[in-house]
Image (tube, rainbow, N blue to C red):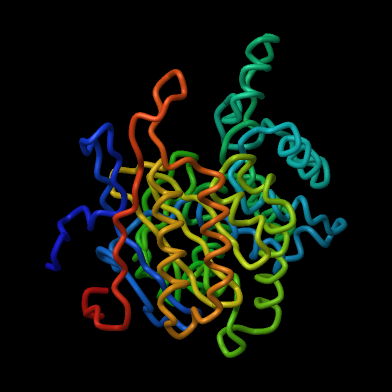
Length: 360
């Protein structure tokens, strides 16, 4: 066990109030190239994590491969929303409604509970006007619509579409294993909050999946899969507000055409850099999202500074780090907006392939 490493990982971010440390966020980081080579890590890159909605882009890739969107007219906005987390913004809901209409799917068929939007403005407006909750406001609405449309186009029943034995879920598992370079049987399964299978895999495998999504190697997959991956990533870049909504870390990174990014849940975040052909996955052990921007900016700066193989294009990571720092304050403020503390990175990446691969 390395210095500073315990069961919850290694220190990644520290929050201080006055001259005192208030919180230390522990976690794990894995940096992997598109061929599966571990370039850098912190904590345990082999730590098993639940990928959850971070795998939505792979569901979207499968939708492209199956001709779901093209069958009734291609729409890049609709592809983007299949990759994302539905905040319930007006535009996200409009695009989801258009998708349901395209396939003749009734909202009541979605196996989702009634919900109000995550988007604060939209939620308050609905509550203020006495409007009821809807399944289409649920954070997982995009992935549910994607699987129902996939089922319709493939001739599969809607019944049981959230269950792991449903043909659509089996296909998603197969595609996830392909991106992550794993056997299907090696991926753990539990149940996600929305009823879908929650897939568990090593952190570095999630980073590999995103590296391949952003920059699929020519000898890894056939031309159709490479094209579907590129098309999905491009849709995410062109419509970041549909992927996670405004003010989100992933949206900031997606504003740069060199990056794709998605939040998972419980402190999981993953992104990839196209020109550098690498994926980065982060897991904050206590599930905090607040620690992620500081950690991600520090990781980007570290990658830019190393000159390691695959990271020689240093301007891109530095530019992204600056964008993240501009978008997210590294200060602790009181209720009057006064600075009373700071949030600082503690990330120390290890570089090379010295990590014992037997661990994962």
